Every structure is written in C-alpha cells, then in structure tokens.
Length: 307
Figure 1 (cartoon, one colour):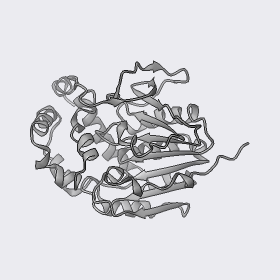
Figure 2: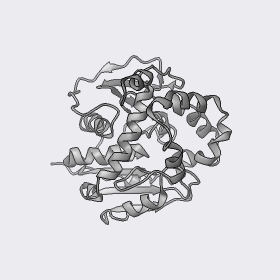
Figure 3: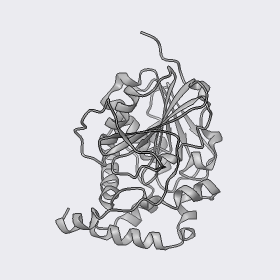
Figure 4: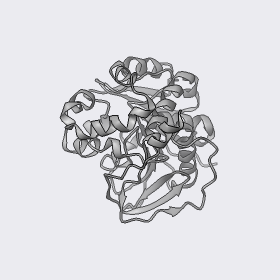
C-alpha cells in the first residue's frame, strides 16, 4: 500500500452511533469487551462477536433475558458503542502478537474474554458474518477453551467461502486511495438507494443499526484491512477448522447478498455431525435483526463438565 494511501486512510472517523449501557467496559489491546449488568442471577453466558462494519448493539435486543450474562466484543479499531461509561484496563489482558484489524487479532481478544469473564457453566459464543470467522479462528488458536462451549455461526464468513458476486463486482474497481471518497459518497446517498438490495426488507431495528455502518470503525484503514484479511482468510483456511467444535449451529439465511450463500452451505456441510445447519427463512444476511426467533433456544447450551 502506498504511503499516500495510508495517510488518506488513517484520518479518524467520528463515532456516529451509541446506546445507553449498564455494565463495565474493558479495554483489550486495540479493542474492548463490555459486560452488561443482569438483574437476575446469571444462568447462562452469551458472548457476542459483531460482523464487519457493525457494532456490539447487534446482539443487545436478541439476548435481553435478565438471567443472561451478556459479554460483547468490540473488534480492534472499532468505536465502542456505549454512552456514559469510561473503559477500564482489563486486569487479565495479555499482549496480542497479531496485526490489529485482522480476524486473528480479534480472535485473540475473544479468547482472553472467554477465558476470564464468564461466571456461569453454560456458555454460548455467537458470531455474525465476520464474527463467525473470528470464533473459528479463536477455536484454532485455543481449541481446549471451547470444549464445553456452544458456538452459533450466523450468516458466517467460513473457510472456502466467498463474497456475493454483486459485492465482488462493486469492490473490484476500488483502489486503496478511493476508499475515503467512496465512503463519503455512500454516506451522502439515501440508504434506500442501496439498502433494499443488500439489507433486504427493513424494520426499525435494522434501520437504526445499519444506517451507521460506515462510521463503525475508527479509520478507513481498518475497513480496507478488514476486507482484505477477510477474503484472504476464507481462501487460505480449510474446513478442518470445524473439527474442534463439539456443540455448534450454522444459521443460514434464505437470501444473502453480502456473502455467497451456496459457498457458505458447501463449507458448513463439511463440518462434523455435532454441528447442525439451520436454513432459516430470513430474507437477508442480518438474520438476528430480521427476527430473533431464528436464534437457537438458550436451553441448548451445554453445561460445562466439572473437572
């Protein structure tokens, strides 16, 4: 990448979206982990890993049961979408050796959170889109950590997967230096001009979250690095990554114009029989935002076997 391109790409992007949050926020490397307060005694723990250009609010309404301990990842170089809370240093943080804004870096963050934060014996890790790849990479980096963890991979980026041909066609002519210009153009266009094509039928929550996609990261360089790393990760990884998952579900949308649904299904079908594939009727890539009814019941989360 040319130095002039890097200079254009590192210009900060202002945070444009946040929500009220009750809990603690820990800084971990270039990202963060938020732990929401729960009003009842926690019976299960859910760790949410957001997708490309999203934020952790993707999961907050889907897991609103007062007995759920909700832990939310903010990927490296993304804005933390909370109001009124000062992030604190995580006492259990260890340095991460991977390049920031990559799946590998965010997986190392996820593993630190999973190893140190859950207070219950029933743990689910739920990743959407790029978040699915972050979980699979986390399993690869520390397989034993996931022995008794249930994994939910929603419309996931998978080994040997692909972007949707429409997305590939749009990205091909875009050079590094064009990204700031392109994002300004997208942000100035009414969402209706592209929203229906890529996001499917809208509802209030989808509109609320998806209208701020291009202000989720702290700079444009993170967008470029996320995308390039994501495509390379799909290409270089094989489906043997699934072998260390004992309890897992793939949630596949009926229509996906972000990722190639056929390639996603082909990859998922190479997984062991301990993983189930649910082909939902969801009309877009954003299954949870279309309807949280597609999310498997928390009753399916296994209880960890005490050593």
